[in-house]
Image 1 (tube, helix red, strand yellow):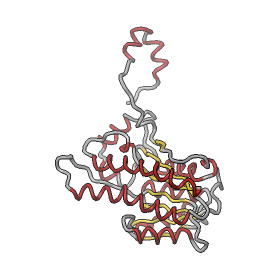
Image 2 (cartoon, one colour):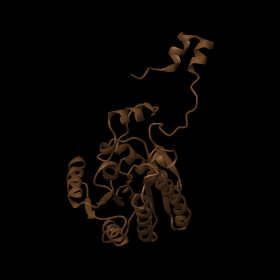
Image 3 (cartoon, helix red, strand yellow):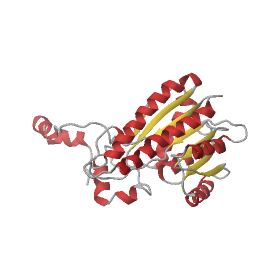
Image 4 (cartoon, helix red, strand yellow):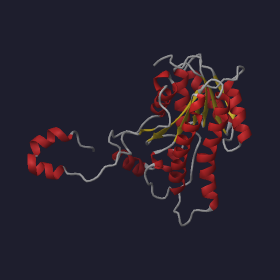
Amino acid sequence: MAGSLEGRTALVTGGGTGIGFGCARRLLEHGARVTIAARRLDVLTAAADRLHAAVPGAEVRVCQCDVTVEEEVAAAVRMAAGADGQLDIAVANAGSAAPGPILALTAEHWRYASDLNVLGTALTVKQAALVMQRRGGSIVAISSGAGVQVERFMATYCATKAGLEMLVRCAAVELAPFKIRVNCIQPGYVPTEGTALGFDDTTEKTVIDHTPLARPGTAEEIGDAVVYFCADSGAWVTGQTIAVDGGLTIPVGEDFEMLCRRMYGDELMDRCVGPRRG
């Protein structure tokens, strides 16, 4: 799909690090002009330098922005839209939450997660759509597998990501008359600056052991899905959430390998099971 976004303008919130950075890189590689937004200007400036090095000739802008402040989101959208006032793509990636047991979570814990994951996404969708009304566009929100499955001691994250996914479906219906498509991606385990703070070796191994494809993902692989939604290839897709997670969120029940070994023998089963994980 090289060149499939040629001439289009894009905004990526939380674009200075991690998944947001990977999304920005893929959009640039496919021809888009990209504005990355985040709260820290130093992080954005460093990210822009890295993006210019990775994609020579790419047009990258930076905008300091707190997605929970509507005026700042509107300013980021205006910068991304440029002189002609047209925004084609918005990636609502900024989000976070703090772990904690429900019995100890405070109102502030809940407000923090809700403000970033729901309010921040809602304001990004609103401000982007107000500009996109003129000619249509594509909005992609970044959720998590936590939006559909329980993660112990991450109730604020799970609940607000589930809310984000319902917001995407509501927006897809309301904005369809304006030819604005709204979709969602659930990344699996992608090592980033953020996960480095909360994942030790044991946690990482546990997640990978539960991932059928048995490896972490990359931020650029999430970006590939963003490109699909935003390019002409996704022109008839809206209101959808896809998991880009190596199979992590596949519901898996009981394992009947031992029964099959008794029925069919080890020789046949060894050929069918595939390599063991070390």
